[in-house]
Image 1 (cartoon, rainbow, N blue to C red):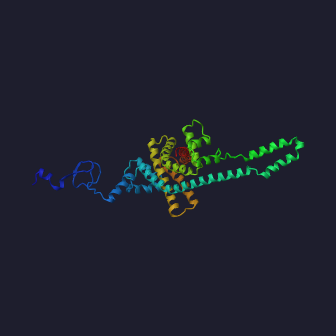
Image 2: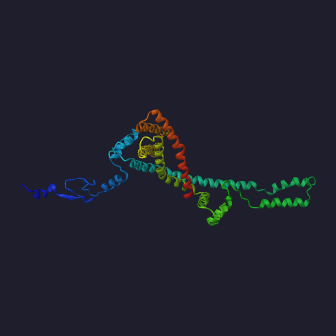
Image 3: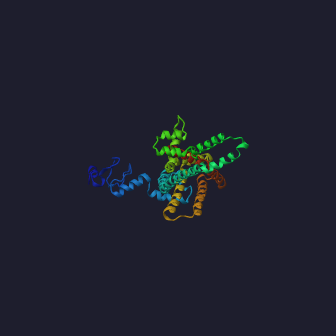
Length: 368
């Protein structure tokens, strides 16, 4: 019969060390009971990429378990998360992060086209303004026949209106002199565009051009940025960068819009739990919205152009999803939930989002 010391040395009880946390564990353990890392995890190409996706995007079984409830059971995931089932399904913040990355990736394909279109429109506007100005200048310039036509009635009636030959000669000289002067039109840009174009062609310093455009002697930061942006637009290459900056800033702005949405929910359901509860609901609801819009955009772009009527029906259906989610999550009567959902949607769409995107557009204009 083996003694205790001999039994401790048998192969079944030999100890090994976890490579991650360096804790001692028995060699038959497949996973470390302290940190959860696999005890014999050989690094292969598949393991490398699976770990990358799993760690940073949580693209594992929990995502697929969460997808069906997210899409077809409004409010269900938020309820289960608050009930304590937090490992069975994907964490709300992780779900939102993963889905938003997919959404903005799909949007980026269309954004590139919108940037190019913005530059093309910018260039067309600049050239059309220039051509219109040239036509207007030509229209305002009198030829010799038109000058003679103006002077003829004055000469014919000089006695009646009291003009002598010397006065008529002076009048004729003034008209010809003014007609010969170079003219410029302060078009919709607010300054003499032809003069600015000449300075640009001559390679003048930007500060000189800004002064000619009307910038003050001691401009502040915003005024300096305004004239710099106007100059880029005049050159026909500024609109695209504004559009690009706008799209680049949207993901950041969403991290402010989502907490604001949760705050509105807290105001309307002030006795239904802490702010964190409403934030959980908001994470899952925005994840649903991004998932729906990602699918629509992907199908429209890569598969088949969906009729606009269907697009609008899907868009409207997101409101009914929101209503059902509110009823299930906050457990209030459907009529009261319907009234609150309408007010929340109106406030968010009519005030919060326009204000946020207005600030975002201004930020993009002045900072790019």
